[in-house]
Amino acid sequence: MGTVISSWDKLSQQQSKFIKSLHSKKYRQQARVFLVEGTKSIATLLASDYTVQLVVGTASFMATHSPL
Image (cartoon, rainbow, N blue to C red):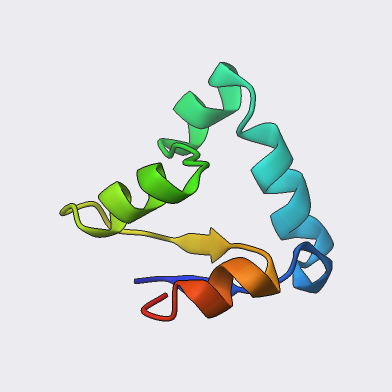
C-alpha cells in the first residue's frame, strides 16, 4: 500500500490540489487514477488487487481501522 496520512492538515499543498482535482473526470482520466470515499468502499478497495497510492482519513477513522 502507498502513503497513509491521518489528517487533511498533514497533506502537502501539492497532494491537496491533486486530490481536489480528482473530483473532475478530466483529471481522473489524465492521471489514470480514481478517488474512493466512504468506509465500506475503502474496505472493499483495500481487499482488492488494486495498488493504493494514498489513504487520507481523520484520526478517529484511522484509529478504528488500524490495519490502514
